[in-house]
Length: 430
Image (cartoon, rainbow, N blue to C red; front, side, top):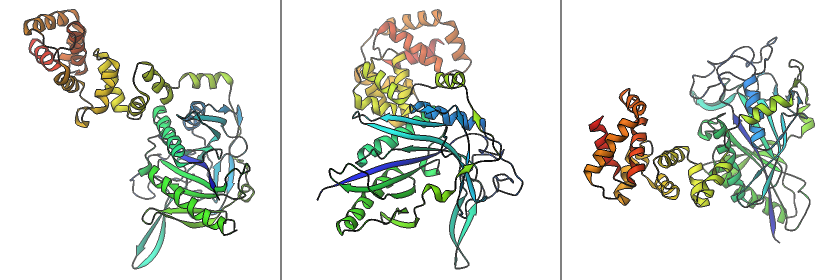
């Protein structure tokens, strides 16, 4: 019997705001001494009242807009009630029936559309640390992370293979970084992946009656392994005529296996109700339009622009996925290097040269330089210096980028002359 994988994802992204979601404590918690960035609000002490972080809300909505979501002009926060040692209040301030963003989508390179159910705002929990003290196994709680702004991006179960899943997850990380709202560093916990996994018979149209959630995986490679392990495990259970227990599982990076954490809760077990200490939030269409207009070029738009310039889809994807090399490509274009050649150089140049456009121009010249009479180079350099007094004064004031500009102006006149030779003559005359 053939089986079909059914996958959906919940991606949690910590926002890089200066303060936490509902208090003034610093949000940058990574590597800080335990429990040094806390206050009565994020420790859940009696009488402490939350005040929403306006910047975090704006960034959440901008992420929703980048994912094509509809925005609820009337929204609210809700209490999600559950008891766990890293949740100081005994509830989490989250969103339930009126999230900021809903009904979006992301299109994969194959043309397949992944439906985004919702993009909502909540507060992060504390962090459990398991250790041995005096031979005893103990669990300690660090509340520095408690209350950090956390955006959750939830999909419909639209995936049936891990290749599409990896493309989607990497694109979400790239969009978040392009917006500048989070580092999305998984090794620091700034982006955490949760996969909802189930299996059904091939050709079956309805969704399975169960799903297994694998929580808090911190790398693309590990989430792929967790899915692959779960699919095999579930097929074995289903083949024996049983139904897998609906539960939350973790992933053991050493063994490559998932393990039981707790039975899977359903929504009514969380006893959601509106957060009484925070009034509902009301937005205007004009406000949303302003935020829409402030979005930068998104990765897909950048890729389309690059392919329109004659760069292959594969190389366009490589450039957009690496902001440093994309920046280098753009600087090479400014120096009149043809687009395909600039892309090739930006992708293949050694890593130690990526931040040095002049060195890259030399690197290109070594391969394709045109021989030019040295006297013509001297005359052209002299003329470019006289024609660009501002660039000259900027260079003399210490702005190295002005030298790159002048090299480009010389090469505009001389074609692909040796960049190293031009640079030396410029420095000599300057």
